[in-house]
Image 1 (cartoon, rainbow, N blue to C red):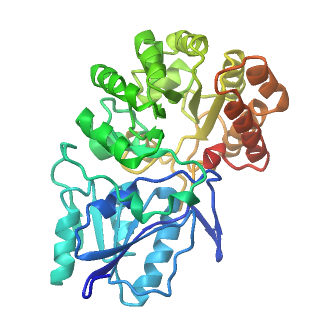
Image 2: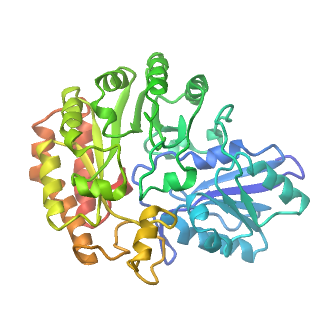
Length: 438
């Protein structure tokens, strides 16, 4: 370290804490983008330490000039614990991330400065202010970045050997053109949808040297022509990649074929519900229940590995929704599925709706996961909603279901699918979400 360099510690907290025991929730421990990307935005006046608490404990014995913590709702409790320890030692702490943007007043109680929105236009300003002793309480993004000329994340500051599955997280776009009632993305970015220059995406992948990529876009194929062009440029790289796109995209045969030809290994889709009224409740106009079968049949025909996400607890959901959903995904031989309860995040339309009807449970802290009900459902009790979700998990990942969906319907990714089903079966039996292991 060069003499007089400032010491910066950037931390991604783990999800849960109980006493002094940290529960590491991701058995795969996939590489995260936030830590190395913030490091890339940092100039050479700082000596940087990155800590991914899913892999290693925070070393509180070392001295730093500044600590930065990225905060998700489910890790916010732990983030605040870490912040308080450093602040008691007189070390300045700054916080950012989705949770901070949704709950600025709460976060501000636990740190010296907060970031609202994107960091590209404010991070360097904060560093200048810190060095000059004029750190502000709030740094707010006043305009969206155009996503061109983004720096390559500093993966050299992470010990990549410690991550069990080395999927490189790459962002090709931000935002989503759709505005669903429950979605945090639309609250953060509105209906804006921006994408990076394709050649810069390709250069970042080449620079990493890794051959497995996870495109972490909230909606990977929202711009069809951009996506088709990008996939053409991915072909020569001979990589395997995964993404999140809509169920509607999966009805597009050209898109599916070019995805597979360019190395697509897995597609995750927010199908959310098979109940048309529930789809209307959530404002997810891009999903057409009548078209689900067409999309899934095409994916099965092309032997594409995919997974589906569902949200239970909408006003149109009844107790029969669990049974009907299970029948639908079993009949379609869906490889993997993830279920959750509606989580009304502050600032979203669904939160405003439920709050206006006094249906948000009093005293409910917006921390943790969507594994417990924090509002009053319309057609069932909160306990029935929780119980219905777990029973759906357990039935879907039962041995009989796995054999019916996987063994009798082989795919190119057979072993990955089969082993994932076995792992998720074990998780659901102890009431832990398979999402924590994926």
